[in-house]
Image 1 (cartoon, one colour):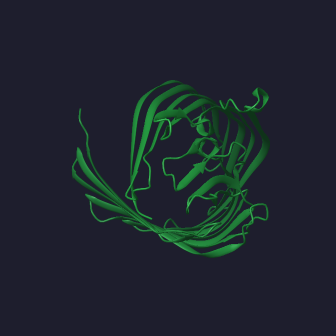
Image 2 (cartoon, helix red, strand yellow; image 1 turned 60 degrees about the vertical axis):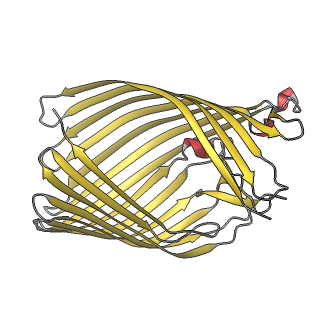
Image 3 (cartoon, one colour; image 1 turned 45 degrees about the vertical axis):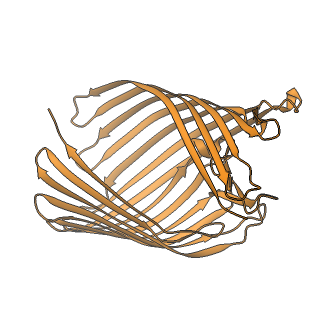
Length: 393
């Protein structure tokens, strides 16, 4: 029926600071150390977002919206690490870390009502959100050599994590007891790792490893505020998201020359509780979509990766990376998502040029081929970054 122009403007006032206290103690034994860190940070943000949309269709009406947003976040980190060598090849590392993030987000939204000719509150996306995320971890790793050329490293990390959220609506049509939604996540996990490395002289080696890792959702992925900056693609976070649980097996081969390093590997990775945006159509939205982050079963990837660094001369060096893999999503009955699979690949190159000892340049190019997702495919992406560095004083 026509086209439209939409202008978005965002003005922000941000302020933040960090306080750090570091402690380090060296024992009489060479290499034995105790390190501790305590840090506190705070960041605040106040913003105003305005959206104006005009339509070429004469029957279209002006769509105007103003959002007032605020954020107040605090980070607390306490960490202690101990390192104890036992000879040339034997080493023990252990530590403890606590990290706490507390944030308060607010959003007040108003829209232009044509009938009344005035801005009115939109209670569907006017709300407060409070989140407290904390992780408490104990970890240790030990490495040694079984023979002159065969070494190993084993590690274990035990982790207790919490995510507590509170969502507060200001909709006067809701009963007071229905305006607050509380979320609680509480889980304990153990993350082991095992590395075996076989050297062949000083020029090449083979490594076999298994690791279990965690990938936690970002703050905006758990924030239930509805993002309406694009009215055709509305988005929302999910405060009940579980972290992704990643199991990885990898066999790699590394070869070293004077000016060239080559590292190739084959791998298999299984990701449980995959975090993906689930997209649904908006009823009566004329093609508009709504997406919300969810956990959907698991994903399996089998692939080959190649990494190489080259020193062309004293002034120029570059690093190359290519990754080709087959990905399979197992689907989800809860969200009516069928299994899907396919090949994906990506590559990047980073080059550095040192003009003078105090002046250098860097350029980086990244390419992501169309990739298989739980729903459909992601389009290709190509990014180039370039910069100049000048050291002063």
